[in-house]
Length: 221
Image (cartoon, rainbow, N blue to C red; front, side):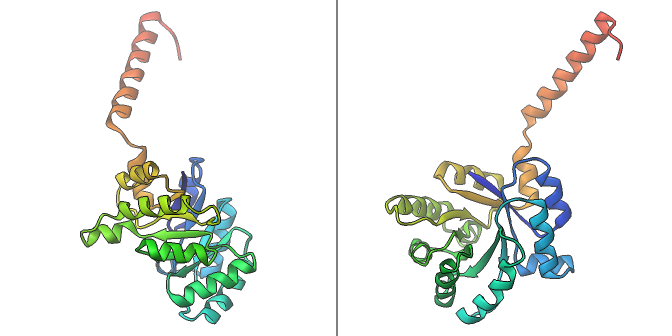
């Protein structure tokens, strides 16, 4: 499973990219607005840090406007992927953009039917928002399982399942078990994924043993 970082904070992206495990980045206008920087400049800088798909979202609500916004964004770097909402106009735009060789991430997916339509339109990625489903008492991960299973039935579908709205580390675990292609993860969840109390206690014990052995043998640093 690939791991994308869900943030527009360039400093965070540099930090986690240094781990060597980040395959891409998802952003949205809200995330970039919080940074107070120019949208296109942030996207270009992220593309220089991470060699993988970088999602940049359009804000138009009509297909023609989405395509018009998408083309200059896609021209920033070959890795730029255009995020479009899963609405009829978004499907129209996805079909046009995919026909022009521009990668798309169809976002705000909440049902299998929507995911099938995204695949039919030629989406590169579809982003089911599992956390928002959980918030209303549904089981978001069940949707991931359904989409993965359905896509496997149709070899003509090449859309990858990108698990979004990840709220905790267990969402990532479940996404991996469900066979999702990608999970996009906020920085705070990345920190939780790498932590385990047995790792910390095991490392402390190892270092203590090493220091004891050095003292006993008179080994100098």
